[in-house]
Image (cartoon, rainbow over all chains, first blue to last red; front, side):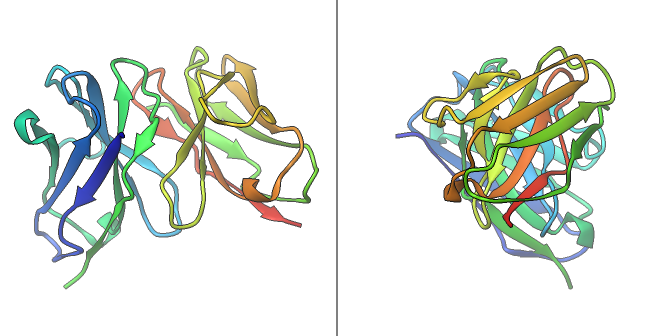
Length: 118
Length: 106
């Protein structure tokens, strides 16, 4: 069945780089897009960026200078890297998928909580 | 970027009530509007896509409508499992979410 699972460090120091992995199963990264969405504690959702099925990437303009998304299709993994972390980057980070150009997020990972603190 | 304004931010209702949640876009989003439900500690769940299309497995008491800049999610008869937070989401251009509507038991 379709699954997405985020993994990465729970704690990151300010000014450091966050590295997260989304490992997927039950579908192909060459047929579906994978997006990253984050949520500060008790707040709303923010779309961060996407890895398209064809390898193209798009980023939220507010994060573009700090964010990079890549993938390894042989390992069924999509990676997020974001540098210069600050305390307001604290939150739950989700990966989710959509088919081609629908932007309908039908399956989500469970999310990974990231705290930015010294 | 397109701004999405949701209202109300908090909605108190009882089981069996008909409830509506509104979302207003800062410009025409051509019906590229989805609705998600999120329960505490869980990932969001897709309810409705492209304004009025019910996602597979979602009960028919959920419906959506709207056009242009104004969109509505309606729950015809509230059930206990419907309490949670609802987010609208536009994907006409760079994707953006509304701030959310918390639906609580009155």
